[in-house]
Length: 125
Image (cartoon, rainbow, N blue to C red):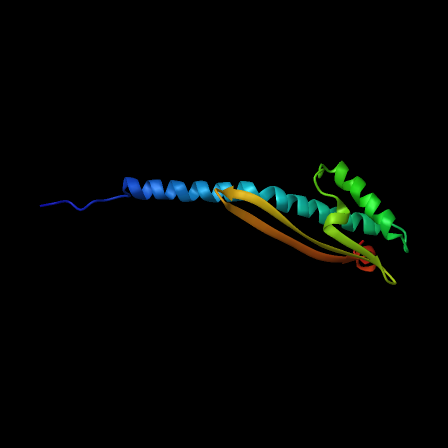
């Protein structure tokens, strides 16, 4: 009598290893962008809390550029990723996109959007 096969075949194991490698490659590609976005959000909140009421948007942008440089984010300028306006309160609208090459002609696109205001930041203290 023939015994039925038990366990995984070589093709199934190879398929699992390939899927695992693709998942790791994707994680390695997108992790730095999400980490940088977390740092950017933290720095925006920090500058909004530390700044006096009625700060000029150009001064805010200059302080943000300094903080981003200090935290190792060298390839991003704050004026390129956010819009700072003052209407009764300082409002920062962050919106940008990061593209990372993945495989061959496939890229991963991550979009980051968030709005901050100084009153909310100061109340969160």
